[in-house]
Amino acid sequence: MKDDCSTVDGVSFSVNDHGASISVTSTTDAVNGGAINDELDYIPPFNFAMVDNGIFRSGFPDTSNLPFLQTLGLRSVICLCPEPYPEAIVEFLKDNGIHLFQFGIVMCKEPFVNIPEDRVREALKATLDTRNHPVLIHCKRGKHRTGCLVGCLRKLQKWCLSSIFDEYQRFATVKSRISDQRFVEMFDISSLKNTTLQFSCSKKR
Image 1 (cartoon, rainbow, N blue to C red):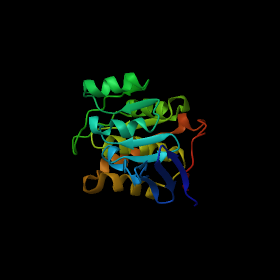
Image 2: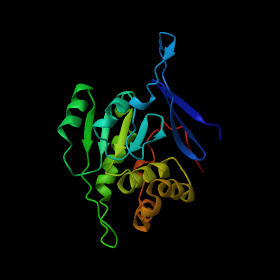
Image 3: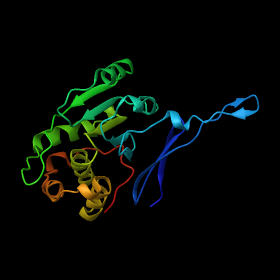
């Protein structure tokens, strides 16, 4: 499958058969015959990646990530954590007209697993609404709760389960949870099947 790429203010994103990738290209300005490299000014949040056109994922952003996030032109952020946002991040969202959706899913470690399907479904609906794009989905580390939500999105995109689980595991690494993958496998997408995936550029079968 051919890569689908987009570039925002020198930040290049692509989605292909092997998943999403990001590259930050340097911006140079001639100053007295020299050049200034602005690459270091843009620090993505932990586990940042492009999911699809207009959809990004990551861990919980902090103030060092704000210049980078500003380049994305976000309309909304979907937070899957119950913890309140730091004041500096809240001010950043307000100043940039970014709407915050917060679906407080308490992180539960195995074997005491309780992933609330209703909240994941509501978060997925907000993700699918292109009026909210570009959108950033995040939890604390961008692994489990975010991985479950993205996995459910991939089911709608008709990815096979092996590809969905491969993507989940690449972000969760050694923290992979069988319960998360079982949740995605059992998640009922029937009520969302008529949703038009206008943004989709990365279907797998």
